[in-house]
Each structure stands twice: as C-alpha cells, then as structure tokens.
Length: 399
Image 1 (spheres, rainbow, N blue to C red):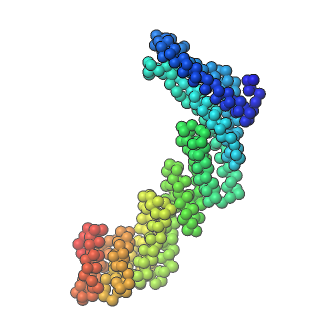
Image 2 (image 1 turned 135 degrees about the vertical axis):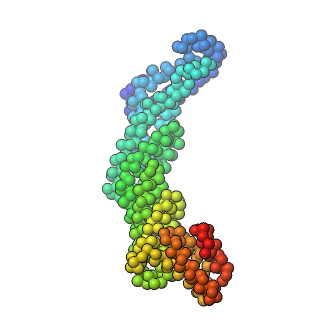
Image 3 (image 1 turned 60 degrees about the vertical axis):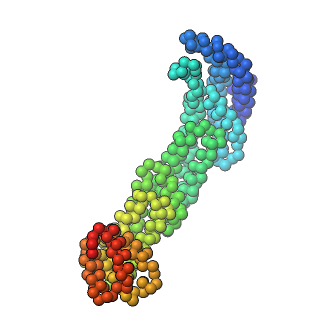
C-alpha cells in the first residue's frame, strides 16, 4: 500500500506509523554497520567518491525518493487542515503533526564541504520548503479573514484581546509540535496581519480609551502596537494631543477663579500632571517617548491657556507660580500646618521646569523673598533654604 489514495488524518497515520518504524530500523542498521561507516565509507569518501554515504543517510535518501516525494503534498495539506481546525477551537491529534514535522526535519541534509571527516550536514530545507512556506501563507489567509470578520461583530478592544490570545496560541503551537525556527517568522506574520494592517482602527480606539480613562485596556493596546516598528510614534502624538486638550479644558473650567488665585491655578496644573504621569507609567510602562509627549503637552498648555490669554501675557504662569510659593512660605500658611512642604516643593519644581519665562519667575520670587525676609514673614528659614536649593539645582542661579 503506497498511501497515495489516502487523505486527512488517514494519510498522516499512514505516513507517521511507517516513518517511526523505518527511522528506528534505519538507526539500528546504522549502528550495526558502524564499522563499515567509520572505515570503508569514510575511506571511500575521503578518496574522492561523493556518491557514498553512511547507512542512515542512505536510508533517509531512500525514504525521500520512495515515500516522501509521492506523499508530501497530501501529508502537508492534511497537517495544515488540522492546524486550521485547532485555530477554530477544535481538539486535534497534535502527535500526527509532530511526527510529520520530525520526519521533515530529519530528511534535511546536504553535503558538508567544510569538514573532511563529515560527509553530510543537517539542514531544514525539506521542512522549510515543503511545510513552513505554505504554513505561513495559510496563517496569513486565516488571520486576514478572521480580523475582517471579528471587527464587524465586536469592539476594537475585544479585538485586541483576541489578538493577544492568538499570539499566545501561536507561541504554544510552535512549542508543541513545530520546529523552533518557525517562531520568529510566524509571530512576525501574525503581527503584520492582526496589528500592523489594523493600525488606523487601533489608533482611533486609543483616542476613545484615553477619553474614557480605560487605562488597563490602553496598556494592552500599547503592548500590541509596540510590537510593530515605529508604530508607537503616532500613539505618542495621540497621547500628547489628549493631554494638551485636557489641560486646556481643565484650566478653562477654573479660569474665573484661577486668574487671581495662585493656589487654584498651580494645584490644577499639578493635578493634571499627576494624573497623566500615572497614565504614562501604568499604561505605557513609563516609556521615554511617552514621557516626552507628556512633557511637551504640559509645556504647551501651561505657557499658553485661557488664563494667560485673559491676562494678555505669557508671564502669567510664572507670576502665579511665584505667588503660590510665597503663600506656602509665609507665616500662617495652612499648607505649612497641614501638608508636607517638601512634597509641595517637589511639585512646584515640576511646574517650574515647564515654565518658559523662568526669568520672570525669578524676578517675582526674588521680590517676594525679600519682603518675607525683611518683614520676618517666613514660616521657616529651613523651608526657605530648601526651596532656594531646589531652584539652584533646576536653574543654576543664585537668588
């Protein structure tokens, strides 16, 4: 029985059963003829005969010609059908595929011209050419169809969860019954089809997740997009624009009070920064590019917003920051009694670093410091020194 009339699992059972017996017998015969392999075969090969091989290699060559060549199309097709069934959540006999893969790998060998004592060297040519190439093509077709279908009936966030699941499944598939060399090609193809080719939809979803503050889902989105080279660049722009718009709108809501109330203005800015710093750390792993996007957005809305526009001057932010410092450092300040001033100072430094007109801040701060010192209005000399030290570190000036 040649097996050429068999299909599906029947041809796989036929092929793997005979392969296991044949390979075992070939190894036994090779060991039995080890003396011939080591002496006569090696001597003939070294003398220039390239048509002489050890017993096991000859057995593999014979299997290629007699069994593999007539059956490989049916066998490979049957393996790919089983893999498709498994992707569709059906339980399959993975041992059949594993047996075929082991055979395809074992059949790969070539003449080794680099080693006089080694006639052949193992290669993955059979496995790559007769299985992996078609497997990757089938994978692309399967996931391209699934992506299009899934997005019609499900949300983008559910799609992203599905993508993460599929990536894990493909890793497990390689570990279970494919050759390890397939993993990088397979994962790259899945990433291209399920992530790269859907980036426009994913970017739109990122804006929705930011708006709705669904930061856990956003973290998953980032992990997937981060798999694609340069794909996070657009995501950084989306985050920057969102932080900027939220900063502008939040300050606008308190602008009536904030324009003359340093505490309201500065603590609103601090709260915005704290909120989105947490976002960057939790959803984007504190990645430098997203931290830079946060910094850029904060710099824009702090230096130009409805408060600065109403005041008719970009110097309004440094003025309000200086007045906020003055309120904290004066005697009778509730902040001194109720909060950790060192933490407040650190928050002030964050805002200060975003201020463009630092000279304006220095001017206002210097005047207010002089009044506190002359009028003995400072809550604490230690606090004054601490604040000045932090300013020196940040701007390298002496006040």
